[in-house]
Image (cartoon, rainbow, N blue to C red; front, side, top):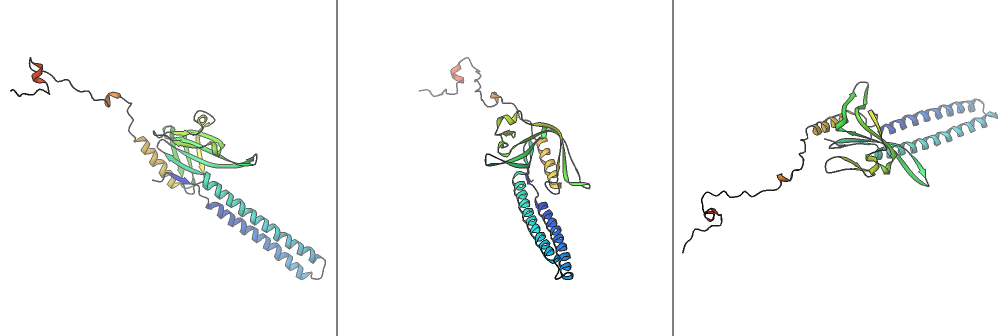
Length: 242
């Protein structure tokens, strides 16, 4: 069963295509209108104004196109790296890219990170008809909003989540009663299936017994004597006479 989901970023490519098509149609319409008027008013001073208008719209269209491509590729890279869903034995993590800023010349990435322990999870719901790309979690959820490099974590040998920054384990988070994952992973049918699978595994995990040293220490039983002579019952006794 899949335990790690990357964000679905193809939606940004689809949006880019729609924006580029709309921009191209707008520029084409303006250029066609100006060209018709140039032909009808050839030799007039208005021709120069119409030519300048065509050049201006073409330039604006190019600026818009390059800007749209840059922003789209930036969002695709950021969400591919920082937006994901991660499962581990006792819970799951939803990480989401939340922006960036520059501090002292160094670029900082912001993330929202949600820790959803299976122990406090009440329900997982999805509406395949009205919202097939959304998934709703209800239960005890921790929400963090920090710089990305502060949100590193690892899983200990017992399957518990431990943040690399120790203070995040005890504070600097907000408790939420529910969380809606909106349109980040495409159709969430597979994600919902993985959630239910790992939740069921957690519920079926046998309870770990407390450590008892007597279970690991063997005690040698004392030999029970059956005669009045202890030497006769000794394991090292040799019945050989000369």
